[in-house]
Amino acid sequence: MITTKQSLAAVLLALGLHAQLTAAPAKDEGHTPDPEHARLVAARKATHELPEVLSAEQQSKADRAMTHKALAEYKAARKKSTASEEAYRKAFDAGLAGRRRGRDHPGQRARGVPRAHAEGSSR
Image (cartoon, rainbow, N blue to C red):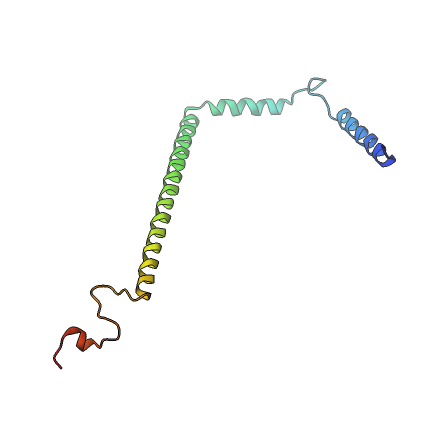
């Protein structure tokens, strides 16, 4: 069932759209080109065809391509760095966990043994 509010909203929407369409001038109907705008467009096109401008544009494109390449290399290096850092952290944590369990490095003295006895001194 259509309510009064829905009907009113539909009518207002239709009128609003109709008002916008009638208020907007059509480009084909009596549109006179602005001579100042046409002059500026022609000047822009002529300037764009100058050799200095063309070479600057080509250099800009080359620089942008180099920037994209450098960015891709940077991202790859960051991924590699992150992977290396994760491997280091895993190895460090594993070594630390091993030391906590009592597995000392082979070059170290045993825990609880005084230094003089571990080194074999005769004092």
